[in-house]
Image (cartoon, rainbow, N blue to C red; front, side, top):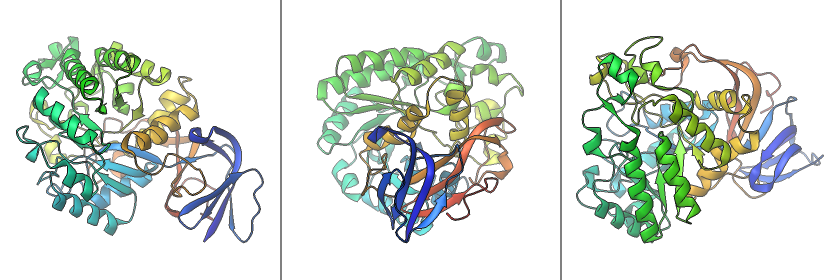
Length: 437
């Protein structure tokens, strides 16, 4: 089946394209991109004025919870949330039950993804067996089974020696090591950012230095080994300084930031609802200077990717005292509206930079297909409605869990449609003009 997406603003930084173009999809591949392409029997889809056609977005940090925690999320519900959020692919963390530290668990996740047949799923394997920080997992086995990276996310890699060995081993296969950067001795039993808000609420806090020490360790070891080190969900200004210095020195270090860390601060702990457990995440919401540093890194190119850290939890798990609640919020369905509203419409970045952060760079970091509309590439396409009014309604989220601090927020910009492998898997019900998709 051929479809001609006609007249949209095509934004494809990988090919230097930003302007009105046609996109021809033939089966599951991009066939051509250009002006006034001939129809030649294709179904013509007129893209509404102002809509943006770009390479499919890739979320390189999600928790799909399956196997073992299906009451929070499944591969099917998580990938349904992904396509509704404009993501054609997701990379899922290994802190499942059992941990994805072997080929059997990886194969199970991929089988569930094939059954769901929605967004592409790229498993990420564990650095250590059981993510216990003791014995290195069989990284070659994980690579052969389909893992695209390794991490003990949820925990920092336990020791510098283990991280060095992981970098050396993964480097042989061209895989990045992703680290939840944190110094456990400095974190202690902290549940919030160390600062005025935590002190006023009587919550134990962790300083930004807790994260930055882990970033410094990983950057130094990446320099030593020559391997690729990736900082997960960066939140502290001191961490960004280290990443910048590493990049200037030629170290293979990359980083991501989550939407909640460039939109919220620790003031959300007290207002509008004090002790709202939907403001509890790790790393925590930090003070305004840290949030502003993340915005600066997004604007100047120091930050490589936006990733949601989609962390679904059941209502009963979150509906407890703040210090007893699990860390994390859902993010797959709110990330794009937040980025359009707070980054693009705020004038901080332009659309091509947003596409780099959400598509081009995640594909490059993980070495997975996508991030481009070059002919022959997978027909993974995200269509944006930049001026669409989006109201976040937690109850309407497709994720099995509804733990979000953004419930009720009204944002400018959203997802119009999501195409994966040439199949239209999501069309926004409030958008007109895309029925032919």
